[in-house]
Image 1: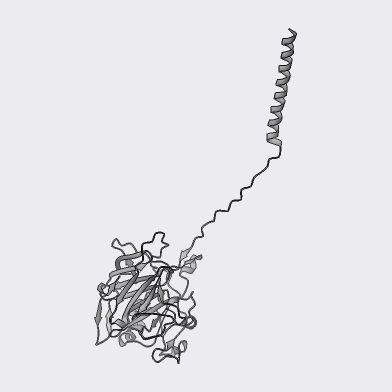
Image 2 (image 1 turned 180 degrees about the vertical axis):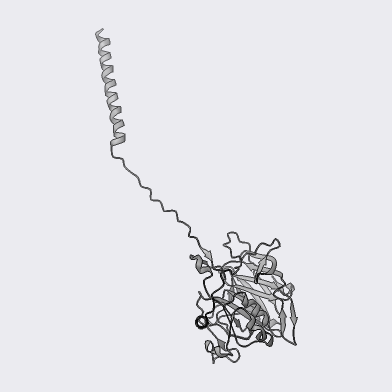
Length: 343
């Protein structure tokens, strides 16, 4: 009997101590200081909302800045034997089309939020270049023009800045160049004129092209050849796969700016438009009726058409979806027939 009683007492004592130990462990879990491990995690970056500038697609943080600037354009000499041209790589858009005989001329369109210290050589206007300049408004710089252009230039919706008029002080002639290839202007001079004449900024309802932030790319065409007329005006756009731009060659020579940089384009557009002669040499180009179009860039080649929509040339595919451009300078090559283009 004594043995059973002793075993019972030992059992109760052991149970008591077991309860005490469990209670202490439970209290320690809640009240004993805990070692806290801090994970060194990087904060998740918040993607900043950016907006494309309406002329060149460059991404800007301020949505108001995308069209809050003066647009201005200038007729640029494109003689095949020119050593260099000024301002083309700062232009948002450059148009090339035949002028007299077999020569081409350029219309360069600029945004006042990009500094351009020297633009030129500035040359004379043609009526169809006035049609293009009117899409942007602002200031149009030129040195005289064809009789057809000068007869109608006052009817266009831009300020015509003519070196041959009283506004010639906004240009200068570089004596190192032969006339008439020696007339230049600058962004600063044009902005001074625009302020004095109270020229309005780009209209707020301006229709931008379809600039995209492409995530999937095709294969850019290695070379685009545009045969305007003679070999002197055969243009080759050769793709630089490192810089993702097309480089311009003409008459078999790489074209350079006055800063010794290769003339380049992020997008090259082919615009097919009807041409007709209005005298022995001068021509008209129909930029209203629409026609075939091609777009070349890093995305690849896109086939479609162009249409004039509310006074603005737009480029569409077969389903009327806007063709895709990438941010940067766009060159528009205006030809009479698609057979003049090889790629």
